[in-house]
Length: 138
Image 1 (cartoon, rainbow, N blue to C red):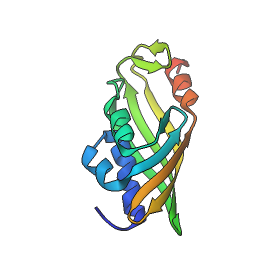
Image 2: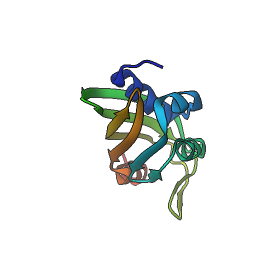
Image 3: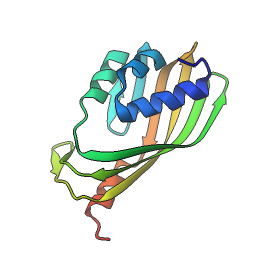
Image 4: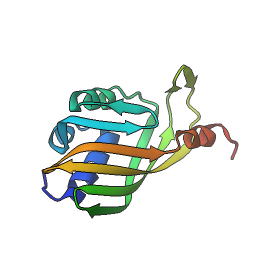
């Protein structure tokens, strides 16, 4: 695993999309604390379990890193995920059946480092934007 925080955060974000457990183990401290609009974890094991518990709702997933800056022991990234909605997607108790639509989610991540690993992160994005893209007519 690279020691450069830029490379670590870039790989960690990609692992969040792909669920690559090897990268998760290398990029995050055992006691990592993380938050997003639909996630809260207090350990690397919880994070790995959440990422492994993804459904097959999206396919043809493409991750893009738009900007990444490091200031001291903090890193900030702007990113986009594009995918096709090809399977049922659950939001709390609501299930949205596949629409076949291409959707884009943009967000920002703030990560704090302890040594060469991420010990805390916050993802900011509007998950309602994906729902809007799935239900609005072209």
